[in-house]
Image (cartoon, rainbow, N blue to C red):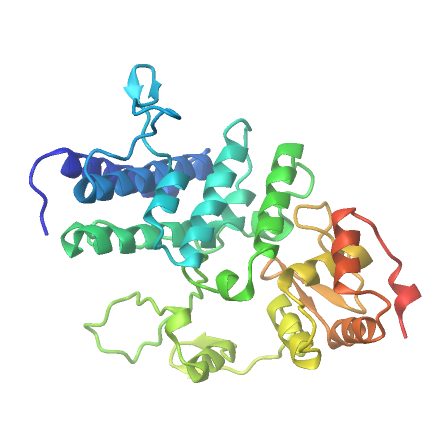
Length: 362
């Protein structure tokens, strides 16, 4: 469907221009205000997309009206149009992961609006959500106005440097995280922890990418890059992807494994749920526990290696933390013995209280 000239088309073209500019700014190698600019422009793109949709479906009715009056609210003489949050509520059909992704950025934009962020660690930290924000935008653009307006022909995969600012990723700005950035990192962690597993793991909330060199014995007409959607893979395929260790040329090379029997947070939660099905144990509960017992530092601290190695290790290569079987056993014993309940854990976490883990070992 190609729109005729008019207000709907004008709004839609403005929306697409904002989205393309957001991508252009984000992909520039030396951009200083990458996250701030990208988020602001994508919020504009989403807002104008909804305005175009509403203009084409309900007409000129997406403006705020004064209470107990049929007159419009005005800002600098112009009618005040619905903000993005109102648009989402009025539309009412977005899937939960998409809504949570948008809500994440609306709140994050409000936080960064009056702060100066000169560190690129934030860019790395929210890359998955940023990519999902763009994917979701294009999907809704096509759903509203058809494939004629798809952006995929306008964009290419960005070229990457081989080391991709490794030191910044691994050390996460050891000594120069300002209070503003610490506040934002804290917000990101808390928001993610509050999400149900099915939302957090959805590609519509955050895109998780695994880059693997493509073996050479492929058809010479194949594309150099192919996107595989994780949430559309079968369980068998997911298991196969997770077993990949290294690919060099045409052969799989088995190398010494360094993270054997180490668990990601989602796997810890999965095992505890299996052992204690009657207890509502979530990612948020797990985050609270590692903070209460201090087995690892929060993101952005000076020394990410400051962990209790009986239970947790810092994975330098991936800039995240992995947990040991001992940690799973400790949590199961803690909850089974009722020395702490889920409500106790939430309250301790809310009050930033700490406990000595040795006092709770069996």
